[in-house]
Image (cartoon, one colour):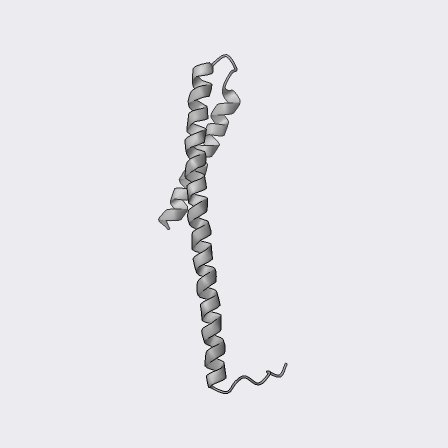
Length: 86
């Protein structure tokens, strides 16, 4: 549950930065540079979170493959290798 809150917080920060960017004036160089820095930091955090999610998805896929293999082996051991009638 905390990962979802963390993701929501990151996207909330992004929405606030976008709102700030739309109100920034071109001559407001200091604010634009600060906003650019914030966006770069947020982007790095989002990329890191994407990498974590990708790794979790790979792990789940590996577990699913293993579960399917165990299920096939179990059905073979019980003699259920015959095709099922539909």
